[in-house]
Amino acid sequence: MPPKKGGDGIKPPPIIGRFGTSLKIGIVGLPNVGKSTFFNVLTNSQASAENFPFCTIDPNESRVPVPDERFDFLCQYHKPASKIPAFLNVVDIAGLVKGAHNGQGLGNAFLSHISACDGIFHLTRAFEDDDITHVEGSVDPIRDIEIIHEELQLKDEEMIGPIIDKLEKVAVRGGDKKLKPEY
Image (cartoon, rainbow, N blue to C red; front, side, top):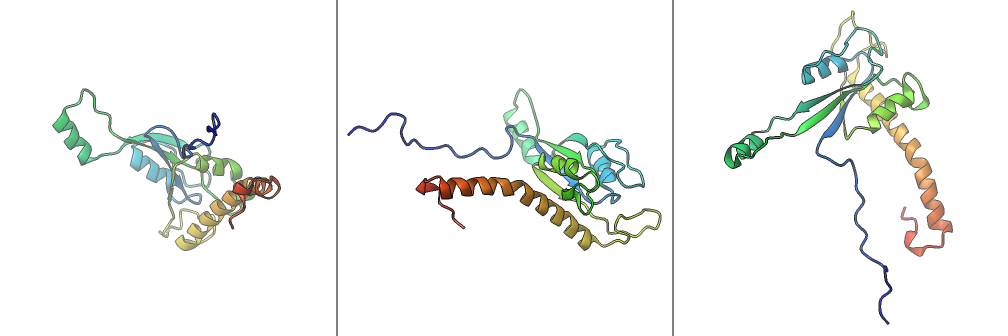
């Protein structure tokens, strides 16, 4: 019997991430740890960096060329008509507070800015200065990293929960034996 038309073809792999070559990295940390100052130094920008929590509300974004000696060598060797180096989009995201996944601080807006990034750069404060306030009352970088990780994990679980429920319904009740649960 001849094969059916449009039958079981090879499915292409899913596309993960964005099209294009520019990656986006977000600078994430608790309020008042120096994210905007680091962003200004890294990108040669003039974003506001003041000594009070939530100085940054809307994310600052800048595009930075990535220096690469291999790229320079290839350009000298091949002498292309145009030279376009790799760029990195850097985003200064507002400070994260404990309970952000429940809407505390900037909450869901903050977490949506993070989800738009390809990578996350965690910045924590490890210096003592009585003139600069800390939202948790004392400087403890390990505690700060744990707060950031917990908030990101809880938001991920909140986003993935409905997807898992939908897949379980399809696998269990859908009658399709190929989609059985594998956990």
